[in-house]
Image (cartoon, rainbow, N blue to C red):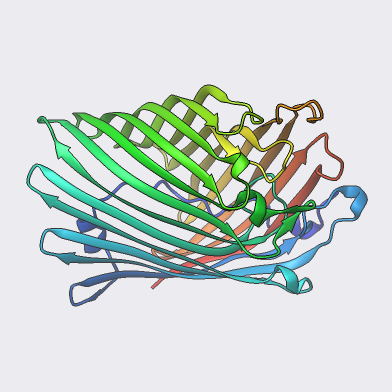
Length: 401
């Protein structure tokens, strides 16, 4: 699959930018571009990848992949408002996805989030709510764009137990709900994956320095499925890590998960998990972002109901001359499937997905960036029809009002 000349001309610009340093709601609100009384607002609009997708349906080469012109327009706004000592912040975002030929792939996707931070002496209270109604690819293994609703609600309290040590307790409920008739590879996604996840999370954070903290998280979670109770499970996770907020920004945590299905037909998993998200600002206008993860995820497949995903991505952003920057990035993910404990269960398998891309961008103004980008994805699988490659290239514009 050789890309046309245009792919070379627009080679390599992902919309990955410089790392975003963590800020308090008060700092973020102070930097907002619009102030309407007590309300601070940061509105933006983006034109994401106005270009070509040469494998719209992630089809194998023998199935003759379909190509189409695509564009995504994304209006969004971040908001902050203060009530006494409490801050309420929120995000509203709409993705308007367009395909010129394949109208079935067009969609309107909404994301809505709100959070509360309320300090009260040695205690501080917090809460978060989110609602995402989208039609997209939900994981590396599902290649169709499926309508689903993801919702989350949590709340908790943090105690400053000692001078630099904080103890937090959070209760959370999340839900995944696919729409009627959403199918992939012969499986009804609503039947196989609709579920509610209830968690209790205990955390300890010790601030070693103003920009470095040690963390310990213990979580107990129950997953309950609407239509497939044989998939129900209980899990315990332990994660120990470190957080940074200086030249290095982000967190890194390693831990252990005990996954116990309620059905004796499903295998247990007792093993390592990890979550690393770090961004480093290097001298000379260079920024490096690293993401590594190992976690358990449910599969749509009946005979292989879950997999262990292990992988990561690396992105490098380099300022080259004045307002110009160059980005290169790549990634790899292995999906190790676990089969049911039956005589007819298929053998365990591991699928692999690789990503790479890059590009060049030009910052027209402090709040406007134009980029030319190229992204390639490749999946390898022992299952017929699940190996494919796909290339997307085009332009992207992000503008903040």
